[in-house]
Amino acid sequence: ELKVEQNPLFLSMQEGKNYTIYCNYSTTSDRLYWYRQDPGKSLESLFVLLSNGAVKQEGRLMASLDTKARLSTLHITAAVHDLSATYFCAVDIWYSGGGADGLTFGKGTHLIIQP
Amino acid sequence: EAGVTQFPSHSVIEKGQTVTLRCDPISGHDNLYWYRRVMGKEIKFLLHFVKESKQDESGMPNNRFLAERTGGTYSTLKVQPAELEDSGVYFCASSHRQSHPSVPEAFFGQGTRLTVV
Image 1 (cartoon, chains in turn purple, red):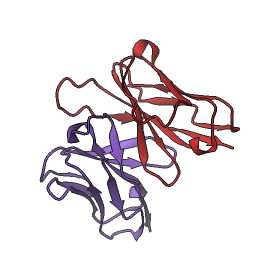
Image 2 (cartoon, one colour):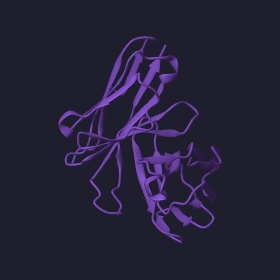
Image 3 (cartoon, each protein chain N blue to C red):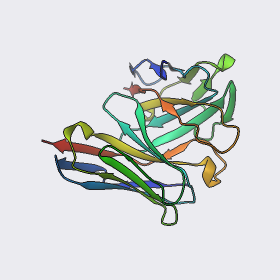
Image 4 (spheres, each protein chain N blue to C red):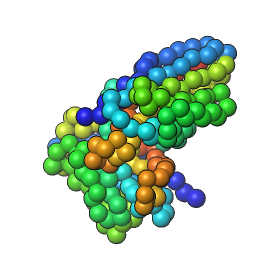
């Protein structure tokens, strides 16, 4: 069974600081997603990482994927309050050969950025 | 273009009652997924439709859950009878049909928060 673990699950940080959220997964897959969710809103796709060594950046967020280590990171640079949200990583089961469809999600990282 | 819409946004029902959740995918999306997040747990895959056909329903918890997608457009998820442990947020997502390994990005609805009391 594919397992996806995120850490930390909760993070409170000050504006201007840098931090990294980690996402480990238990079986081979080369498709990993990062989503953002604001309270009461839908999951917003941030990044889709398709191959080993993939790095994508959007504003103050940068995501990377190491398929050999089965690890993805979401790095926040010079955090601002607007980035406060819950961030989920998810792995595509289908492409890991699990035989089933759908995404396997981590528990999410609840991020609070304080002024 | 309208996104994935779910109805209702919040439902509170008593144990033993029936609730039906609805999902309207993005027009033209053949893939439709249901997920559930129980409080404090991961978002879990429930099932996947391709048009009106169930492609995979391995994530459905038990036979109290019934999903349909008649006509291949909107989908409903019925819980009958509801139990306390069914409380959670139910998400729907849709994407284009993938004909080969590509990146059919899934778009999520805002979710339906179900509370069973």
